[in-house]
Image (cartoon, rainbow, N blue to C red; front, side, top):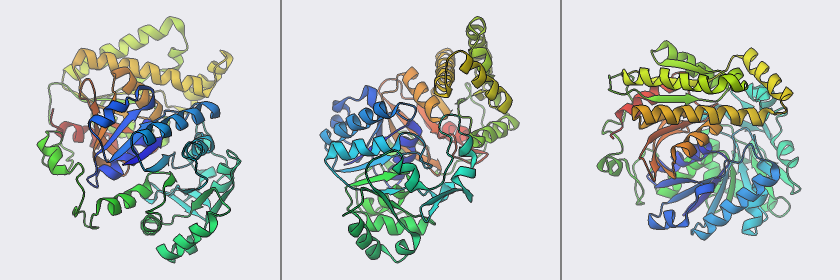
Length: 452
């Protein structure tokens, strides 16, 4: 069993779908509600624990990652992955250190490149859609602004362990050459960052690291590693393994027989409920596209959340508006304020009130999740889409979701899943910076095809 520690719920799903689509049963559980009996009763091939620690202090993040690693080891996992943001946001050093400390290890391979989502690493420098990381949209991240592009430098500032890298030239010599370089560097390095130019780079790395006990980084490497693990041919035919095949999922009534997600919009008695707390430009573009394609969009006004006399009435009004639209069979999208001027003003007022960017992010996520829960309660909605890691975690907690089983990939790193424990919600939890402009519309139609 592979054990994965992820620092947010969308990242957990992002890496989980890489294994699920290879036919391996993959389950996700939040650390705060982890129950060892859950995995023991229905042992998955891949077990992921979400620490929801990206916004925590370094010390808190370390403790959570250590606890999650310990839980995975006790559950019977023999290989480990520390899943982080694909641009190194968060407490990467403390969380990597926690896994190594807990396992009594001194070395891990780190791969951050995700070519299918525009992330490449060359000479240790990270690029996002062709731009240096420090010149990308992540420079303006409200909580973790990325102001440099050297992955070695970023990680080294968060750990006392030595960090080194392997350039693309060595990787492109093939698995044997790369494996030899890894073995050479493990003698003096603790974290070895590997360049990634394209998907072929990842295939070479997957082959070279197939016996490494600890890997760290983004989810992209796991897509190639899962192919090797499941014994799949490159055309997708499963040769070995007893994981969660698409046929089995159909038998269990979890997905429709049609594999394609059509962009048709069949009328339903209750629409699909969507919530977006992310402020990334990708999510803003997806919101605009969804609105232009008939999705009823309502703004959660961040300024009103800071006014005690206005907050409750504003949230109640959103519940009323969204519920009415959904009962009429229309799809609804609730989203946090994303205009730059309003976001800046919200941060300014929050600062005057003694709150930082992390605090206001949590306020918005909690408010949005409270509205989602009320709308789901009044409409009976059981299919939901949520954009943003913090918002997704808040919504799942508010809905009482005890765990998730990964089902199908809609776009790279963006899956649907089934809630485990309690109400069997069908969910799509989206990373704020992932997905095409039309993703929300695609995901809505994907959810509509899923059987109750």
